[in-house]
Image (cartoon, rainbow over all chains, first blue to last red; front, top):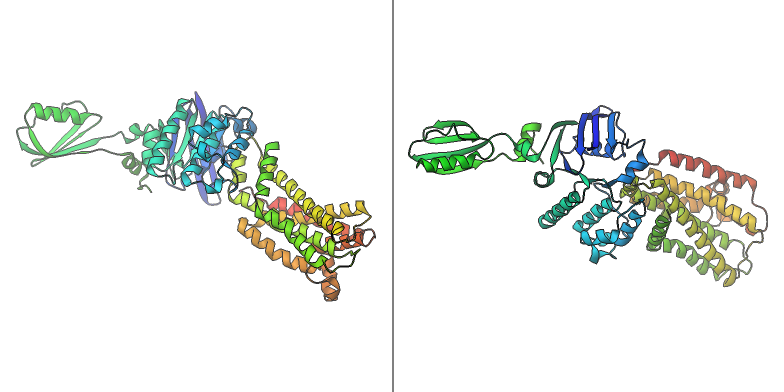
Length: 297
Length: 231
């Protein structure tokens, strides 16, 4: 079942087209990534879905509801972590959670969230005294305190150290495991690759691709080596191999999927000796560059 | 809503600015109060006007502009609670603060200093409400126009001193040039101060000044509502 449906969203500010026909849908229980450079309409799209902005045209349904017309119902069902928001400096961690829990009809027990997100010992700390990572975890906990069906997380791990990022990823997987659908806006390739079931790639106000990270990377990988001894026959027929080219003793084998294992096994079986063996795997970043025509970051 | 009010009250008590708004007028009252005659009708209205001015020009706009700057209003927009509730709670709290400050001043002035307390209680309350409304409207307009908390604070300071001067809070009205004093009487803080002095002197507040304050309150708060941005 589609939890979010977005159809042909358009938005213009004066001369600038921010959204130029954005469409996608998010399935229940998945982590859906929204990937793209800054200024490509990611945040405008997500904020329209959250009901914070009105697009010029297009249709949005969140759990079957219109985020503007059915705003109160939708806000009861979603949890949001916004980029660049703060809390009052003097607000204590427990007060923030207790306060936000009181906004919802059926909130979660915020004490549980305090434990889950590793904030139990910061319970009485003031927001202004928290580290970047602690603030971020508090924001995520606040996004979940209303017991939402869909959680929107915008630039989840910005400002976190590598260890804290990994820990956050594990927690997000747990959020999905608990049945909450997650919409993740990110510009980190590794994060999207690690977490997302499907990704929408944004460029110039359009969705240029929607697929799983593996599907986006898809395409061909290349294996290169130098022939030392033996005769190379029958590589073309191996499973996954899509092409073999040879220039002197330099060989390039292209293929999909797990073709590299088949190739090395084949070479060993025919006692072909090679050196300088290298496997060039396409990354999500390569896929992104190919899709958008620009490098990331 | 109740919890929001409780939390905002806690935050206000943790805010040093709130304490200053209570203590500065009290300090002025006590320093000058040692030299007044018993039954004085000038000093206490002055201290009250200063207290209301401080709350409405410093505390109110700075708090609201900071809330917007920090994205607190925007974050609230994504929850079932409307950010307008936070604004309402803040207005109410700042009003309570202004009342507390004035109550404290009257208590100290009335007991320790032996200053005159007016017998026209109803007129006094009415003047306080209309005057505070006009000053709060200015505070709201600052909050609406200032890009961030710091700017709101700066604008508040910049407005406070000329307004306090025109209202005769820095220099007695009698020592000011006639034309300045005449203009000053029709500024929001000036009309408030003059109406308070009238009440303290035992006469009814001038209907003209009351009307002036009410007009300020209405027009300026409409402008504030028009210019206010949630983000």
